[in-house]
Image (cartoon, rainbow, N blue to C red; front, side, top):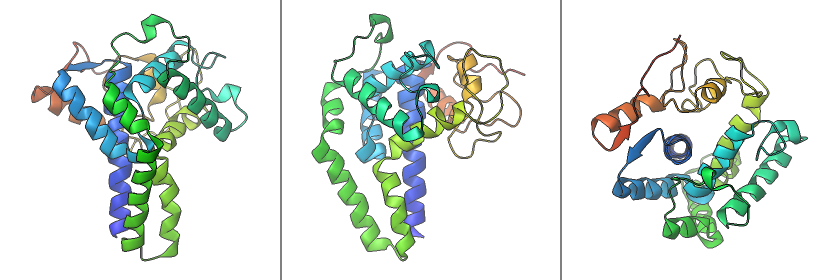
Length: 248
């Protein structure tokens, strides 16, 4: 039971950091927050993503490029230009590292307003730190695991961020349904998104890229959106105007 609780907590906390802070804030700036709260969520993301910490700076820029060049040769992660998901993941990793280390030739418009706390960016990307997180996960399993099969979950802990990314960037461009006609292959992967906290409504998001609520139809519940509304009400963030509109 302890292993299952730990796995689910890591899955959803890491996913919340990715969808709330990296995606909706760093990449799309759907809401604003003070520099103090920005640093808080940097640390929160570092803790919840652990060994697979993703740079808000690099993620934000890369995701903007994905929207601008979706399913073209300039897309950092399109299934249309990879033979399998592992090739796409490797390509994405290389693109991500080039952005992170300022080796990619990126137009200034894609960098505008992206958060960049250099201390945390460098700390989260150190291999010694990533390995240390992995050791902690492993020690937890050694202490609490009661069945050998539970250890099969460990690689997902090590690569939690990329696992979340590939579920959407690969599968939500291949399988699912569409509410809108868009100029790419983005689809809604799940009619009720219990797994990805709203991220699987990918077709909706590609059509309405600035909308904080990824769900559109009555059955498309975005679990992250009520949290955004709560944080907005508590004045931790400030939602931009018209981000709470409903459609269809």
